[in-house]
Length: 161
Image (cartoon, rainbow, N blue to C red; front, side):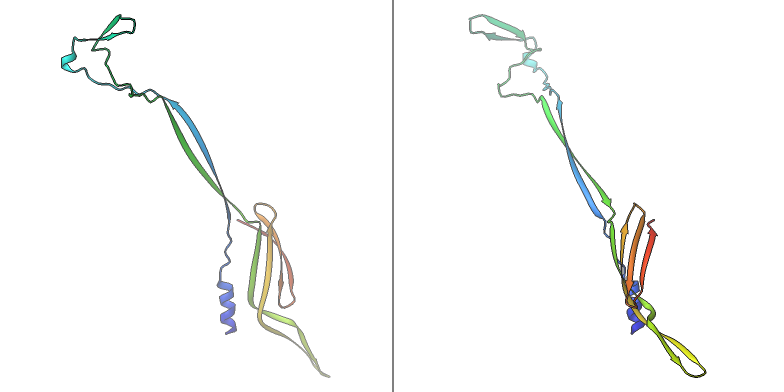
């Protein structure tokens, strides 16, 4: 059972999550454009004239092939606004790590038995657990420390790649 627990602890992955930074930029651009409404001259207006009587009583006439009479509500589109949203995301590495350790190894201390002709030294082994902390000090180099249940304390330096 101890071996199963040890293997289970060693095989369970630790998940390192990266913090995601996203920013959205909105760009608005105004484009000036004029829309032309083209229509063909109807056959019955070919060669005809369009005459307008002005407020002072004078008449102004123009050829029907060049001008047309339209309702006042007709409009031309003169400006358009185009909006473009750009979202940029980048993942930053987390600067800290904490790990749980587990395995099989020597337990606390040594047992020494002495007799007149013989000295016997024994050590006990079994399940050992621990806790580890690491801190990135550059983009790739980290330092850390760990303590274990068998009264061991370790310092480590590593390289991310």
